Image 1 (tube, helix red, strand yellow):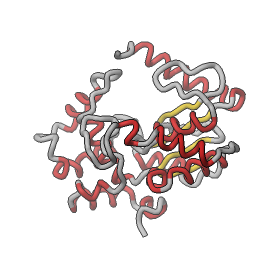
Image 2 (image 1 turned 60 degrees about the vertical axis):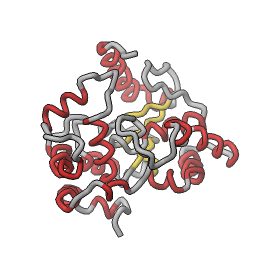
Image 3 (image 1 turned 135 degrees about the vertical axis):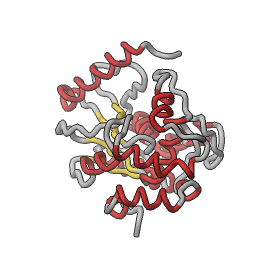
Image 4 (image 1 turned 120 degrees about the vertical axis):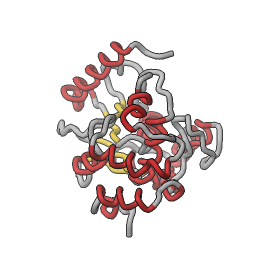
Length: 253
């Protein structure tokens, strides 16, 4: 059931106030990402691992909780978990999300993106990606900042705990345990394995990674899928905008 828009906006204000004024006092934990980097997945697993509530579409309690979002405001929060993903894969996932995935809480989301981009054939992602990449770096609609803005805010922040989507796919137990340890929580290997299995792509999407559903929030669950969609123009476009950032994030040798 779709939530009332006024309630959604009020909740957003409440969350912002909580982060700004009660972060340390209540022991809040922010998980931030550029969209489609796996932040919700990380927040779900952390909620189970450290026994913090993770209210996804409801008012958070006035107490400890995990907040998830796409935030670059420097509020001096610590600790913060920052989730990274290859921005080339992000562009592919974000393309399908903004142009195909219906959001019951924001019914105009896809329509606004389609209106602004106005592609002749939305299924022709190889043809459309260069323009889509340019749009999201030059005039992003949601969020109102680019991947570069996110990178420039969080990369190298020593007060943050950093993790990568690709590492979570390859060795999820090790990566989750590392994040918990950096946050000051002990997590047994057995408990960690149970959490990883509970929130795996297969468990949540009811299909194996690599089996695509373009209309799902959990579309494919793999890394490196950008190679199946990028043409030479898309590669040139994203390299132009990202500059040194791909290498800094270890996505280039």
